Image 1 (cartoon, protein in one colour):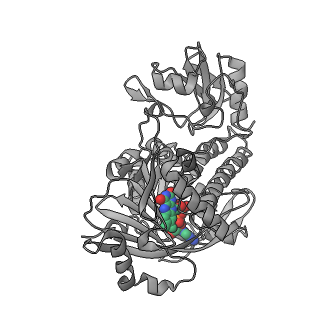
Image 2 (image 1 turned 180 degrees about the vertical axis):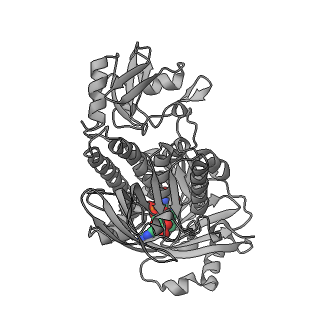
Image 3 (image 1 turned 90 degrees about the horizontal axis):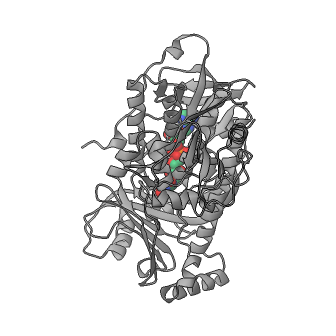
Length: 531
Ligand SMILES: Cc1cc2nc3c(=O)[nH]c(=O)nc-3n(C[C@H](O)[C@H](O)[C@H](O)COP(=O)(O)OP(=O)(O)OC[C@H]3O[C@@H](n4cnc5c(N)ncnc54)[C@H](O)[C@@H]3O)c2cc1C
């Protein structure tokens, strides 16, 4: 049977742009059809912003890449129209178990409150994730939405000409030229765009190697994340086990720095390692084996002139915490509505600087978490190892030590505290839903809060009088007043009697008050679009 990652999903096709004899101008060009570039294109096309996606390949990616997708990106994917099939195919999980030496240290749940439509996490191979995104893009094309995905279109040269970017693109039938009002660089960790435009990537390289084996086996381990520190089957190192769809299991074994990578990848060396972990009798087949090292680093800014960097092109983290693709989706969620308003002339292009500010802030948080996890997993001195082992031993018996155990702080969305787009806040309302925070989902009546908002500014009101629509210079803010529920009250009202929230198109909170005041709402909207 041909696997999805072997099938050209967007084979090369000649584009009319190749026959014009001049560079055709497009409002938005995205370089890279990885998870982040595809999500950006879907978001824009869904809102009728014409977008061309160029990729040097014609297939979804394969190999040891993302498997864990977190609740917030799944909520974003619902807004993009493709969250459901991913959750249906994926393996849902919310429990993690930590082992030290031979014993279980403790377990934890990632979803400690009810009333959320999406699970805390699903595990889904990145090739399936990308396939669902390509399917969604094809659906949009069938609906006549303006999106063009061009396989085997490799960008070979770039120039920012002030009011547009000029691209040279190579294809199986030779090169052609394009121009973009705005360029989205989603071309991955080695980003040729970053290099061609002469920008830096600063951060830290971790001296460690991890063996990833994706194995096909029938096994009755539960759908949980299991993490071992110093287990008998991989002494002095760590190990991780995750279940994926189709009976594929991800096994991640730390190897240390000084290894012979080629030797370690040979099946005759991999299989005994896996048998030591799974038992001599375990029956499995290797789907994919690779060795990775990682870095925690980012660009100084994510906007340079007419180019906006997203995903791995802008920032990289270690896989512990699953913050790579998950945070890349939050980049595009933050960017798409801002770019739309700028292209429509409703907002000034300075609004795009807030994309850089807010997502650099998010990337810093991710890099900090990812670096801390890595330092705990791989102590850099004897003292650090003694501390770590003491914490792990204490955590078995004593709850106070458990928060100190760090096997990877798993991806959560960022609250944009300090963003210039944040408007007023009333401190009597719950802290978790303050300006800058993403909306917290909640059940309401027969539906979900997050299914009712998205892609536009909205007013969410609780026991407050407000008009159904407020118009501000070309932007329509419609009002959403949902049936009360315990979850809504707890998350948005707390002890207050009433509340009014201004919600951004990316479902982050812009401002909130106890009562509706039209002048205040209009002023907050202007703040939220950078005016
Ligand atoms: C072992 C491992 C485990 C991981 N686990 C997780 C996880 O569980 N959860 C998670 O969220 N993340 C995880 N990640 C990270 C995740 O894989 C990446 O963050 C994600 O792939 C980044 O997506 P992207 O679209 O930014 O870049 P990429 O997926 O790298 O896509 C870039 C695209 O750009 C194209 N391209 C490059 N150059 C050009 C060019 N010149 N012209 C045209 N196209 C070009 C490439 O062909 C590619 O299709 C993991 C990574 C690794 C290595």
